[in-house]
Image (tube, rainbow, N blue to C red; front, top):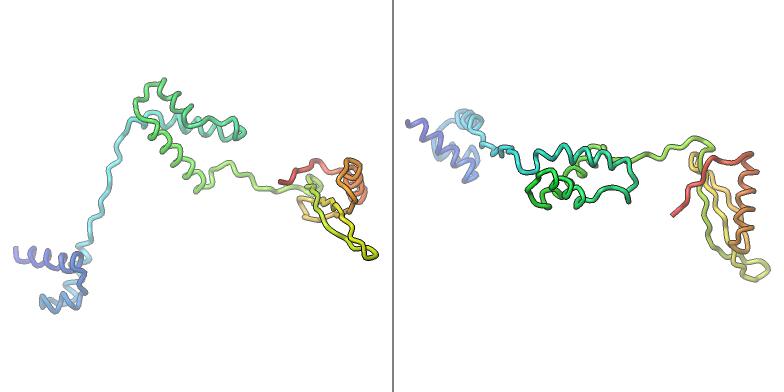
Length: 196
């Protein structure tokens, strides 16, 4: 009985009052080794919340399958949370919309953290793709400022850049810039990727 009281007293002094082991030794006249041993055995219990089934649990598999199918669709064609909520309501779900949105948010966050998202790295073969864009600049010739339109063509695989300057951005200049690049490269690339 006395040991239990001392044991409880040491725990209280260390965990609640946040006293050091030396201070506990001074107050109780117990050896440090005994105090350390008792504290090691007396680790604070951690609260574990018991997982219990909710109203949404029977429909979680259905929602996960819908999300998995939607990953392969364009973003505008993916189902919204409200549409998924209506679908599971027809299947007998009696819970609220907030439960569904919380589940969808957690599932998407989990996918982003674990790398299960639909991210596709941009790795392209040589000669597969290019990007084209215009920029504007000024050139001084003979003391006169001339406005120039520069056509930028960048190869996606090697990041090589081809520049050509024109007085305007007309269709003729666009076609000429592409013709010059493809002539210099010795062929046409498979596709062009628009810049934003």
